[in-house]
Length: 536
Image (tube, rainbow, N blue to C red):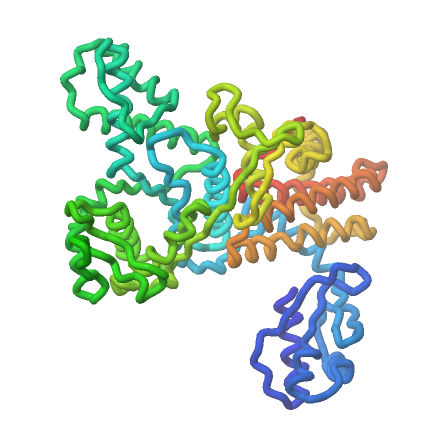
């Protein structure tokens, strides 16, 4: 509909004998009395034509011709408001019922290859709330972009090398030795979580003290694999299934890391100082330089990250999205600098920083797990509120907004709980359809003509546009907000109108209407990883 109005406006503008090549903006007015769509084109043209916007608007309206628009009004200081004939809403109802789970799908991505890397937590501990938020955002964005025709790869980068893995192995070994009654020092930066003790106990239960002669590589490999398996299992329960897992160790084997540094040197982006080799990223995007090779000739953790992103570019993606915690803010500039220094387009790499999450219960911030005394884990959150509530709540807010996760609200069975409110709309419709369902779509709807019906039909009609905006702007919360508003409109509709009546035609058309609403709710929730219940 927007495209039809824009096309008609362009034809009207031609009659003004003016060249206007800027984008024509069409928006939805907040007040219903201002129509279905509105444009500020007359005010924009005023700068070109040097005339009063109201006069320009009148001239545009005089030649405006769009069969789907039944009325056009001009409002000061020059807005043009369009009232669309309601037939398009009923035609769209047929579209929803026909396309079903594909309603809202588009091809605006045109097969563009997108890589979204998210969570990528070190395999040295269990996933926590920050990972839960990043996971919900990354996976929801991937679902939305796929729905819009992008070729999306969801990727997890496994940091299975470096000092943190050495400390992991040493920590497990220390706990195992302790179980064997032997002394072995816990490393200075060791890991003290219960999962470390559990892994040592697993080794001891199977092998008793016969593994005391194992070198540190055994403990590193055993612990890394166990933690990765645990992380993947938790993420699968959370509804996330990655397409690619990329190992830091594998990247280090695939690329000669010293060769990567040599390439930076050949391009003029390294220098020697104080016995170390430095990356001259202050000459690109960063405000200071960073060490690549330390005085003792060991590589810093920056080098394999540079190689990893070099590998991503070599895989031919049109765009790469990295989702980091807000504490990685200073890392973005050096990473993008490395991309440019190696001859790749830094604009293809977008880094998003997720803000902090506070867990709140009874008005108090919950910092520690009741079970472990440590940070609350993703698994504990799922066990406490369920996957649906966790995914929904983390998808409600823009990634760059700090948020509170209210445990009590997320668990409550009340209309104050948005995920309950939306799920109840779906379940309520499912209950009606379990008693009476209609599959045949009539050529023409004859009884759906009241304002409450049109309101909810307009909301259903808006779904494809919302999804496209969410994909283009990379904002999954637009879908979450939309589905809440749709559920709210359904509840209002349901309270004002009987679905099952003595009039057979009216009943059948009401059934088809709520069936389309349910399908739209389902499609929206599926894009944010929420599976609504049939019964509540």
